[in-house]
Length: 106
Length: 271
Image (cartoon, rainbow over all chains, first blue to last red; front, side, top):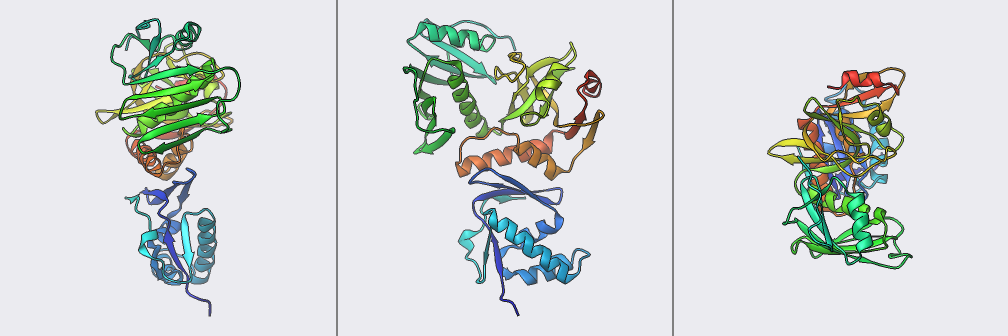
């Protein structure tokens, strides 16, 4: 069985949810990202304390019509992509709150 | 808004873009004349400028080792530099210094940066967009190089007043968004009219086989706008302000995708 993975939003971003989709701007290099509704649900649940598989089960599979294994694979790709862009933190341990985004507004 | 052309003395000139007057002092009469010619239509006799800058002219050569524009803030003082200029600005003292060679391009860049910093504090921005006023409302056409800004400006009908074919100036005044004319030109090389008008719509440009206007999702509107906003400083607080300004703008002003042919009929849809 794979280890638990935890995800947290970077503090170096500005983000806002518009029409159900999250728009994110990196404070470091001003790059802009937008997330679809499923990715937005994962992003919103990225509190550093909830394991990724629980997020998928409780936020994605429960709210969207998607099979758990497919959802988890897609989420892994998303997390990897966002982490490589520096806007999401990934760890095999719970992530301290000080790393979370303080700039997010709804 | 009428523009008055008058240098307030032989050693300074006040350039008013977006209703924000900035006074430039120089000891060089030839450079003063260059400024007067470059910013004709945007000079004002206003005795009270919002900020004062002393322009020091350097001999030909590099001023800074920075290749790209570098803008940063240290203890409340802004530093702006690129290979061809170096500037300092103290907002609290409402003054600064610019060191450059005697050319119009460096001062143009400094002014653009200064205005982006000023506008960010009040919910406005400069954006890569052509803009024009028609029937009392301003329309913006945003896109990066090659998107068609100059083309659509060139196709504008006689009853449209061109604000710019390159850099649009957006300010939020009394909870409304206004576009102002700018002297920042693109390929058209024609200064915009120094007037303002409430913004009717912003169009994200795309070239296609026919002329059509399509709605876009709010997130795409914000992202499309953000990708076109002029942005120089890496300051996190400034990033936040610009981000908020763009999101607020898209919540107040219709943003659409405009696909067009290089044909003047596109303007039949803009009114």
